[in-house]
Length: 491
Image (cartoon, rainbow, N blue to C red; front, side):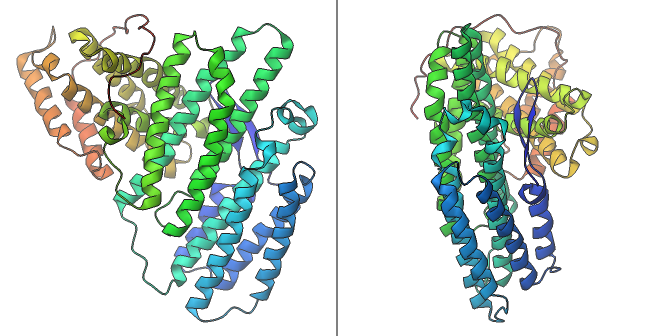
């Protein structure tokens, strides 16, 4: 019941969740709590339902790993604890203490789930009885339910808190989302680079071993996506480090497991450029996650070793990939909107970033490179502007991601023009001076918008950029660039 299913497309693959493990279930419960429609007793009942489902799930996979057997006992202890609270205290302090105790217990189980040895055991992912019976999906289901139960308990804890809880501002919401965007870009780009390892082997046994490695990577990538749902500034600081600990352990497994595949694609320039982008996304992810845990304001791109342009590209890619994932999960990858989203991803990942990376490694790439990147960014923007946000799948979430993607593309364009201002001091061939003056003015205005400004301001910059940008060119980017080399800049 409520077991995730695997969805696979030419572009990406993953797990689609339903029932108690789905984000929709959690959001519905939390909305009822925030609106005052769910009393304290019903909140405890919602957690109890999750605990019952978890006990059943852990019983089913107890033979896989000792951690899951121990978690059956933990769920039984939690159920007894919830039974003891069947006559809840009216004291807000007592209620808050109970909810915090529940959250700590759930985090203990979640940590054991994500660090279970079977999650990184290559032999398990070669075993037909393990993969064929969907054992990895049961583990993902358990993690999904645990994440939801933690979020539900925390949501109600805010409503009964004795001390006033500061309202989460729009800026903090955006900063928390940056962790998820960097994670999404990192996972997708890294996996797309490593899939090429299957092409370099003709020996069936070797190919099966490499497939097992990719299954391990995919599985842990999906676990990290679920854990990242707990990155929320509404969660108290003393719980954020527990989220970070879970996430870091999974990311370490991904890095360790991918080493073999990275060596196999060492001579593939195409894969190396993607791995370079994945490395930059991981740097951004680590920095944003650390600042989220400490509660400090997210720093500038320069502080984390990436340029402003690349930083914006990572966020734009993350938004676009999340919208595309909605179509991939529902089997709608052939939908025209999905095709436009996929084209945008390919342009940013495989055309824009390699050119920007080459420029940052070698220095000035000349006027041709400067204008080529700008035109590629325009082309990526075009692929998104043709979409009608209100008609996207899951528009409540996708329309906002779509708007932010346009915002980040505008940031990338402004940062690129600023870094190559000497090549935009004269109009391109075929452009009038008056038209170019308008473009230059817009660039200056847009550049003045801080990357940490509210999203509504960014949206205005996007619209202005779209109105005054120069005509699209039918030119294609030049051929291959040289293999990536280490950048001469400090991290």
